[in-house]
Amino acid sequence: MKKELSVDAIHQRVVLAIVEHRLPPGTKLGEEKLAKVFGVSRTMIRQVIERLAHDSIVTVQPNRGAYVSSPSVEEAREVFAARRLIEPDLIRRAVATATPADIRRLRDHVGLEHAARAANEKRAIIRLSGEFHQIIADIAGNRFLARTMRELETLTCLVIILYDAPNVPACPYHEHSDLVDAIEARDADKAAHLMVDHLGHVEASLDFGRDDDGEVDFEAVFAAN
Image (tube, rainbow, N blue to C red; front, side, top):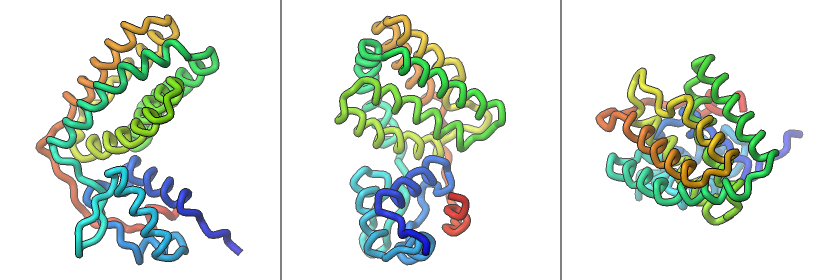
């Protein structure tokens, strides 16, 4: 008998599907459809949606249902403004606390990013780029800021998915490597400066005139996971 998934497991799978653009911004998250796909009760799906809404990943519209959030241009810019306030401090903390194992973890992750770019795996590129920043937040050691970064990273993925400019890389390929170099060199000032520049480059690469829409097959989205 197949074991029933937990709320945490379903939440993680939905977030991953959003990050990998399998559930794009604006997708309606129907409780009945999701309950059928995951083989659980609508009550459990409702708990998942409540958690997603709490983190602003999902927007609940009265009498209409829950939708994957579609950040406006103003909200997108606010996300990047928040990251520019938080991440320079996080990377300064990471410079002070990173162990050799942490440096190896970051370099291995950058290697995965390079491989995804070489294979032109756009969904993997977006996910891995976000995870890189989360690793830095984890290394920094502040649990509250790390939790905030998880929310901001998922929102950033939504922004990139929604406003991605064709043929323009949202994350310049060498900048994560440069950040790791600065951490390994214990150069906090340089690391913070590079982080601000990096976030500015990502924001500047986006086309805030784009839109996205379409019907989503939930069974196809979650069949392979």
